[in-house]
Length: 477
Image 1 (cartoon, rainbow, N blue to C red):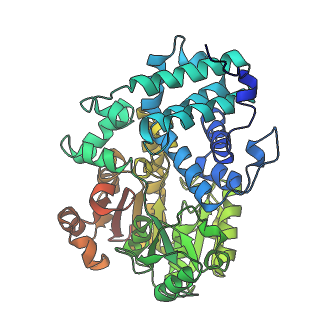
Image 2: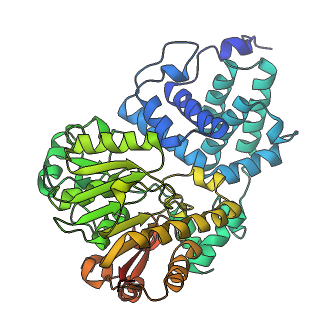
Image 3: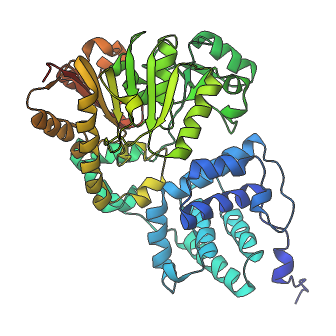
């Protein structure tokens, strides 16, 4: 028999896993086991993999590695419901009983095997074992290796007829998709929510124009084009680049914002000189947008209940060069309402806390954290904010209610109940003169806009999921 060298397991995997996978592991573990927000941890960890490589000095990630990390993190979180099901079927012990770090390693490895056909199976398995080898005993790493190689060998088939499992959505959340768009359209919406959403910027018209911004981005190697709907919007492909590292962002020429969020401000339709309040302003994008399109010539108040979020808002306004915005800590339901924010206001924006189902593609943690019980619990909070907002609007003034969800109970049903409680003090007003022709070309928008509300959907309109309703206070008490 020929002599073959015997390689000890610890020698085979002595090299640590590659920096991109180490960084992805670090981010996923913080999100899955500590409840952190993926976008925040990802932004913090992306500059260097030091924090993800405690056994050695990390290396700065290049653009290709950054794109890979982002795909691994968001892909794993998006497909987590399916991944956990398959791992539970494959393992010989309950998945929940595994060590937390091992769970993260298995989830990351399973994503690569099941949903990343461009990644060689050998790399997905070997790099997962390398992640484990520097954290856990050889026996545990052997279990990781055996589990992932079994998945690679057997390639579990996911039945398209089991829509929640196929689209990686808990059944109760998939049920909300059916309520929103109907059983026939729900799979199309669910498929759209699995895709990476577009990166969209809002140009700060106080400092630049869309055409100048596109040219400046091109000078930095980023190709961009005008948005679909909002005149201030720019769409781009980053390819692993960070928009926050560009001169355009540092100098306050742009902010990252989806076009659906921009359209909320167009529905509000602020005018220079008006007194306006944003009741739930953090992180401040919509408030800043109001100031930018009116030349920063508003009596504008931005409120939020959380002190740390007020700091974020103020930092944003400073970067954008906005001077005329008052920032206040306040409870949007009206408890202990500050005198500085007493009405009446020409316009009030109530962009309320919601289930966030419209952001499932952008914030995949929602797939894991949002439940029917939590959604039901949000309804009285939204109603209380609406009722308080009504007390701040002057006769003839405008109230815009908005959410980032397509759940009817939080949207049109919530608005209808508010109007009933108000007993004729408010009415819906048409959106037809406030929306671009490119959006009105969609039949569903043409149907709902005259009634004063609209729901934006990823699979129909190419934006995040948003709802907005425009209401007018029609008389004084």
